[in-house]
Image (cartoon, rainbow, N blue to C red):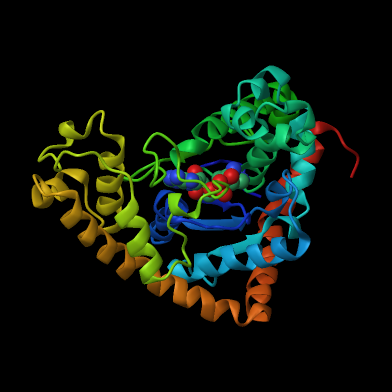
Length: 346
Ligand code: TYM
């Protein structure tokens, strides 16, 4: 394996927990697609993360194929890049164990996502949910990935991954130097949180994130929604009584308006300024109509392609199997070196 960390490598993951939505698409998957032109990329369906909350086994398998189908339908190329599911590469779990012993409990206690997901009944959350960020660090560092495209909500987890990489490099500095790595063993991965839709909000409440687990389906646009569902959800989306402002500053303190303008900008591959140049002073009813048309034109063809791909599950399974074999080829030497550095006899 290479002894310097100069090569860039992109890694990111999506959980197969159902209800893949517009936030996942705009905050993550469209970014994954764009990065393919310039980087070697690994895109992972993180089934080990999914089971930190109980998943029905049949649904988990279906959802794993569905996320894979969404990747491909959105434009990820599984020939030139690597698409696989996490549980097929055992190194994720092995490295996560080592990181469980590197990360400090105090660090995990600061994770806001654990607090939100565990809620009030923290005693009853799985132990896996608590150490979830260590597994996420392992996902990235198992490949010495340098860049990680994610939505805003994953920023804190990425900071933790950097802390883990740094602490490992410090704790094992002597054996790392002996193994010939001059500038540390694990690179500190950079989060890539870019574009106008890094945090897409619920359609019913502009202060809450659009989420797979929100009970009401009216809060989100699913990747498999048809044109009628999209039109209905956008029409019913909460707004305020004022027309749209003509400048971005006018979106401050108007979370619902800000969210819809951000979604429009991301779908149109432009920015909020330019959306407001066209729609400043427009009523919400006309803006919503344009937004529904744009959303339909972008999402419905992807949903249709996903359905087509899902009709042939064995094809998807082959993509994942081949991806896993290629992921193994990168991960195995890195895991092997990690074990040597830690002092395990191999
Ligand atoms: P997950 O499955 O919750 O979400 C997948 C990706 O979608 C982004 N996202 C959003 N972006 C904008 N607006 C939203 N409302 C929204 N909701 C979700 C997420 O930020 C994410 O990028 N822990 C991760 C999965 C993971 C991972 C990794 C990511 C596991 N290992 C290693 C990067 C690197 C998660 O639960 O994502």
